[in-house]
Amino acid sequence: MKNLRRGLWIATAGLPLLTATGCKSYWIDAEVENRTGQTIHELEVDYPTASFGANSIAPGNAMHYRLQIRGSGQVKVEYTFENGKTVHARGLNLQEHQSGRLLIELSPGGKVEFVPNLEPAS
Image 1 (tube, rainbow, N blue to C red):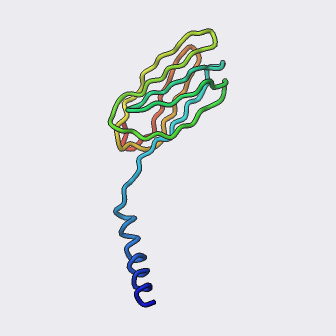
Image 2 (cartoon, rainbow, N blue to C red):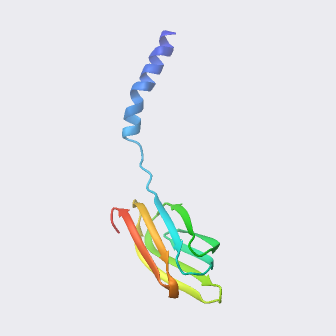
Image 3 (cartoon, helix red, strand yellow):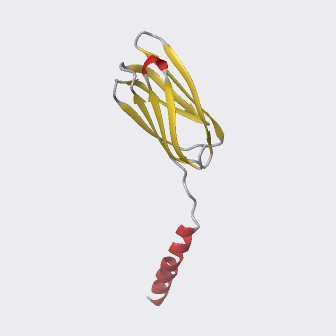
């Protein structure tokens, strides 16, 4: 019983040290808002070493995605309007170890705006 208590005390005493020196995960919460006034199709967002997307997003709706950056590179967006016109846009550069929020606004006429709130800033 004495050894069990000693083991529990050592484990409990070491826990704050373990959490203080632990690894930090860097995540970016991305949101794609469809403000185009029409349904978009085949949305694809490419970022360093990965991508995400949706089959369609209705007007006024948004898609949320949580991503982690490996390496560095530019964000690219591609989607198609109901009339078949495809939009291609290039945005900001992302770096490994960034975290925060990235808003991607899809506006009428194929305009795409990237609104970052990232640490460290890109």
